[in-house]
Length: 180
Image 1 (spheres, helix red, strand yellow):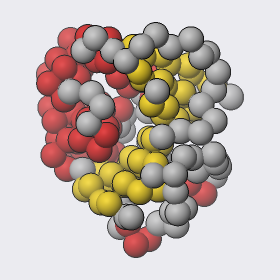
Image 2 (cartoon, one colour; image 1 turned 120 degrees about the horizontal axis):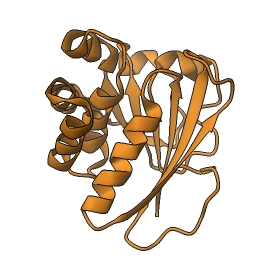
Image 3 (cartoon, one colour; image 1 turned 90 degrees about the vertical axis):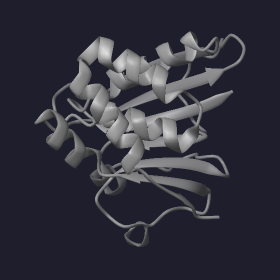
């Protein structure tokens, strides 16, 4: 089972993005679950989500304590919450940032990093700072766990063609780095 913890802020589309990942996995014949966690439910507040993907039914309905992958919708959360708490060895990190890898203090458990300025792409493609569809494309590239074409189709159906274009742009713009 693959476990993902998503960190974002209210209004960035974290929940909708996770639902698209679940739908894409199911469409591919896999199993997936998503459990959102909302603290203070207001725009800009930290929000979390817990996602699981597997080839067999998923019975576990708890938070993800030891993720294989972290998706961070806002790099300011790195200084605000314990993003890296409990991550597994050889973890994957997908980060929405305009910073360089050398500017980030990453724990030794992180093996693969995907960096994308999803905020700028969302502003250019959509005119709004909602990076979720851009990060969906980046997630496809960084993990390889779900298919970009399925995700783009689902994004287009849910949010329209400009969001599908943002998804493709996120895939193309992601810098993938093996840090160990």
